[in-house]
Length: 277
Image (cartoon, helix red, strand yellow):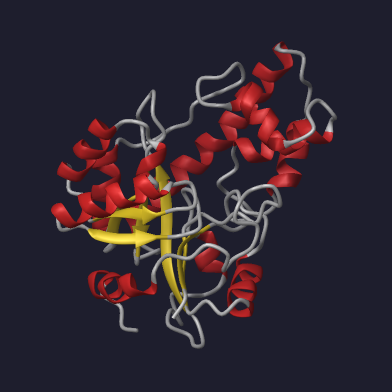
């Protein structure tokens, strides 16, 4: 078996549509994938997975990735096997969508004050079907205007957290995110803890009731992977992993199947989320 439990689509900031993700996953021989878009489950809805969640030859696990409200750190929580039609969840996602579009307008204003002029209408076009519009869409519009040669350079110069053109968006604190995922029938996993940059926060989140840790991630080095594997075992937490695939040519991995976690973690994962292989 070959698995990937962290994948993004055009429903948020990925470059491949939900169906294109499934097609590529099948092409490279993945047997189990989780679609985990930022603050939306629209990709899963578009695939009608609520009706056929275990369609063979690939099992698709409904998921989501939430940002959390910590001023100085990027803390993301993954939710797996959630009820995508849960009323409370859908209410919260609707609020987040509204705020994200307001953030786009505020960012455009801030960019203009810095001498970078882009149009709201172009962001709408670049976002397409995405309800989780964000900084990547804005960065692409800036690159199109010729201000910077790449999205990475836009982030490094303008849009990094607390950078010159950064505008925060509405987020829940991590206890509320964990509670929301639990209420929607899912399990909560701390995404890429090595990117947080603060082990005290990782420890706090563990004690807040997180169900698992994303041990295997392309931006974790060997030492980090070993460290979080040990932490997960010490606290009896679920061990997960995924590519954090976005389909962006300059971002590793550029294709599904290049980075996959050990297939041996799948049995425990499926047991905890209440799914059968």
